[in-house]
Amino acid sequence: MFANDSTDRGQVGIGTLIVFIAMVLVAAIAAGVLINTAGMLQTQAEATGEESTDLVSERIDVTSDVGIVSEADVEDDPANPAETFDGADRGELSEIRLGVTGAPGADDIDLNETIIQVVGPEGQANLVLADPGDGDMDETDSFVQVSDEEDEDDPGDPTTTDASTETEPRHIAQGYFAVEDEDGNFVSASDAVLNDNNGEFTIVINPMVEPFGSQESESDGDLEIHALADGDGGGESAFGEGDEATLSIVSPSGATSQVELRSPDLYTDAGEAVQL
Image (cartoon, rainbow, N blue to C red; front, top):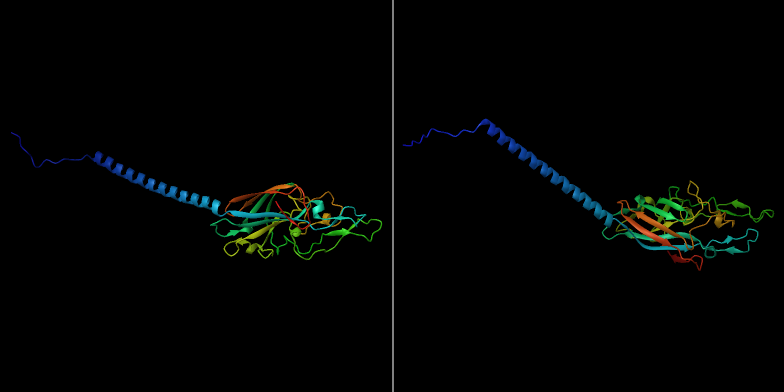
């Protein structure tokens, strides 16, 4: 009654075949996009992780912050040079010193690429590393002025003299900080790198110039410090008793360490170190 015809074959329409091929192509393209997207996300995640690690580990730790009370004697009244006042009497510092080291696990940290953002009594400024051999610190202070006691008509008239041939913190020009090694020697910019060989440095800041003090420095790195020598002061002052400043030390990776400096309200002895 029923006959099986072995010659019958199923046929697929050309339209169905085209749709199938198109679906396969779409799936392949989608898979490729997903793989590429996953790769990009992984790369971005790794980069973000490295940046986050750098912001934590490539940080500069501040181990100490002290100020040195000025030992310079200043005449309160140029007409009466017998009466002088040292830094403790005036309530002024001659240098600010910050002990710094790399955070645990940090790689080399180049202090020549480090910026110190300062908000002080005389405004705000960004400080960069001074190179002792590049004019940022001058061993001869050609702007030091002393009272001309030989001039009887004007005993307070200052004259200029080369009063110093040794590099000191007061030679650090406005807009700069200096770095000392563990032996107390100023370090060149190329050697100012915190690493396993240089475990700790001391950042030295001049408290006489802005934004800490109100004295001015010349563009060639010489500091005009007549207020510490001629006695008239000229209304200028250095960072001292009761003053405050905020420092943000930004490493090359962008990691920031903040330091709050608060000077004591009263100094006791010239040359003493006071906690800030």
